[in-house]
Length: 217
Image 1 (cartoon, helix red, strand yellow):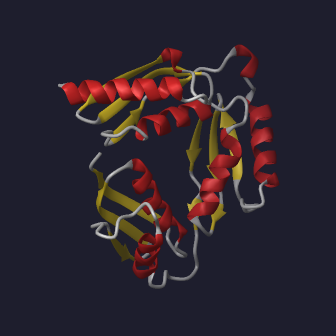
Image 2 (cartoon, helix red, strand yellow):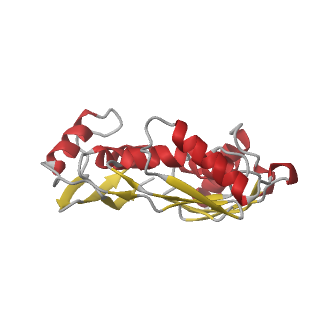
């Protein structure tokens, strides 16, 4: 029971500590390291940052982000205005291919199009995430790589060996079938988890990453 209270209190403290999060309307629940965030935040970056703050806390093995973005009246943008702003942001980002487009419905952006790498898809999300009026983002961007991945398993495993966050005795395994990479094994923290996932997405030819990593906390 003590550890449960410690995790709950630590997550609440981290949310209050993070200057990018207004935690006034956020409630936290914890069940053996499974943390749930409920309540409201005023913009989408805070929705993302609140989850990131909870993931930084030792002992947290999973974060269920049930927060709702409730925009202040002055931040509301009608759908045509928000879609125009999003497409302008995508067009101005050199990492995002011209094929990516955004549509808006009640503050919810949907991204579509085709890219060659997972990093380009992530860049598209980042390009529009901070726009005023965004309540959520649905990423329907396809990764289309013409060639089969070459030695992806070896390339990703080598990358993990280079990373400072990953211990030399890590049991993380990379298995590639077609264009899908499956990650298994144990990591201590969400930072390690994200480093492993990022390495998999960076390999050429990867269209999907199946995350079966276990966070020990």
